[in-house]
Image (tube, rainbow, N blue to C red):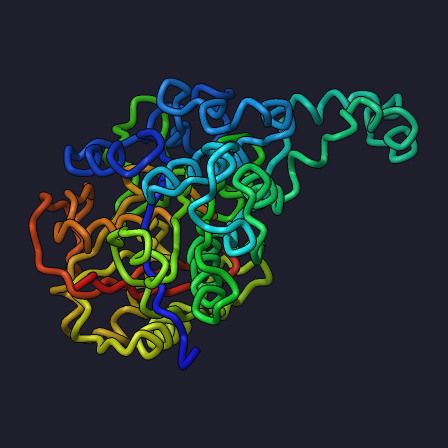
Length: 443
């Protein structure tokens, strides 16, 4: 092999509040709908925000993404795992692949030992009911926690396989078992940057010939008391009480932005060697042309207060552009995190300005958090899936933003046909990790 193989995207499987697959998401964006709604899964009256973006059961049933022979394993799937399994099934269908999970009797499109899997995951929060049953049996008479009682009787209230629901690597574990992915596999846990970093790793694996295709992306659900509480303590959640307008809550880059709204969802993409896609007659959506990563500086150990200079964001983008052989002036659209969290938006904006200069104001941004919430480890993969679809369709979907944005093409805008050559997707995770991916149009 004379050099790195070209890597393309042949299938996308976003899973959001609108359901599984690209068409429900694209239609919702074009219609200007938001999936943010009042939280019904638990009592959120004590939280700063009573709103979230969740995937309704009528739009996604995890059982439909799991073969009958694997249904017993569904008992140890946390919500994050269910989302990853559903997104993988949607991506595989979109790519026109046959795997053991699709038809165990058929010959797989890609040999199992040539199929890899890299999925970003987050800090999976345990279900409160499971923990309370164990903790209730672990207290002293005065109500304080007793570690001795926890070891003697409390933890006995947890099922023997309890931990298998909450290990971050279980997202990739279940997906690889279902679809018999025997190639390189890994889990990346870097908050919102996880999906982009996973796609970058899959790209490298395919480039060097260690796999012909990979399932790649990320998924996470923050729709639980622990997940929401952590985000609130980090100062990332907007204030939204009863009666608030869901469509006005998340306002990326707006001067009056107040924070974000948690979501559940993510996306799995099928990355494939261009030669493999050609051999099976599959036209890709886009080329994964470049990848870059960096670590943003933070003044606190949790990585919440990031350096507003944005040097690390620009470094990641510049590395991705150099890797792709794409000049900044060739980029026709950007798909950033655009979370509505003022501190994170400021870092992104500074980093983008360093790379694109005065031209930044004229480059349209593809934003999705106002529609689907902050899906954490799944956010980057959703943005990259949208960027690839925009390149394939040569169209930017309608953009939702109730705020006033100056100096950026990030305000509310209708869907429109636009000639697109290259799109940059970026994500900045809680903790400061930064990922940048450059996608190019298929000629």
